[in-house]
Figure 1 (spheres, helix red, strand yellow):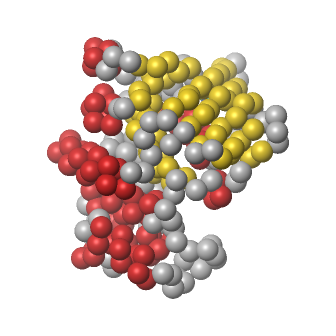
Figure 2 (cartoon, helix red, strand yellow):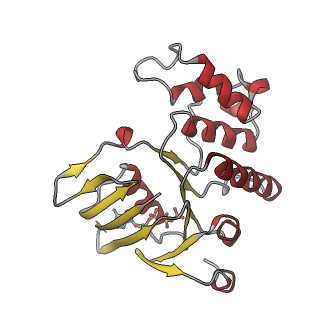
Amino acid sequence: MQINIDIGKTLRSGSRTFELRAQLTSSSQRIVIYGPSGAGKSLLLKAVAGLSTPDRGHIEVAGRRLFDSGGGIDVPAQRRQLAYLFQDYALFPHLNVRQNIAFGLRRGWRNPLARVDGEAVRYWLQAFELEHVAHQLPHQLSGGQRQRVALARALAPEPQALLLDEPFAALDPGLRQRMRAELDALQRRLGIPMILITHDPEDVRAFGEHVLRMENGSMAEIKDLDLVERNEA
Ligand SMILES: Nc1ncnc2c1ncn2[C@@H]1O[C@H](COP(=O)(O)OP(=O)(O)OP(=O)(O)O)[C@@H](O)[C@H]1O
């Protein structure tokens, strides 16, 4: 996937100012943005998703201009065809697994319990081995199952790219290893491009094809992954 980003955003609260200046040009399927907490990674990912508006610049994904301050373009989040996986997965607590996955497939947003394409929901339940918990609510699931539901919900509408915000942070270490392997295999199988943000060097090792370091709102290319291990975020 070709991605081209050059954006700026200034955030102010009291006397504190945070400057995001993000530039990224890549044709990699696996982009990892690595950096310490507060570096601006989530701000960048939200700007790509259309959940936050930059002050200036442009964002282009797979040949589509999603944002361009000069040209007055700002495609709404729901029309960007990008899936955003939140750190805490943001599942709907009152909807069961099946309904959570189906939510991503509905056209109308008014009635979450409306019938949807049963075939597609069945496919994702099966692909993520969630059939036996299809009628359970999110709080009745394990951490790994919750992550699978969130991934299934994100992938069901067949997005052009997957945006992942610290996807393993909420999992305990054993499960983290397993889910990393699962996401790795899934990404390769589907061939879906992804941008993953993290402060964990293990994620960089597992997914980093094109790696950038973010610090204080600015980005720099990392060519030598050994530097990540020596210089942990
Ligand atoms: N209104 C604001 N005024 C000033 N600074 C702000 C404002 N809102 C957010 N920030 C700053 O923006 C920076 C970037 O936050 P962001 O959530 O993108 O960081 P991050 O790298 O994703 O960190 P984490 O991994 O902890 O989520 C932070 O340092 C935060 O303090």
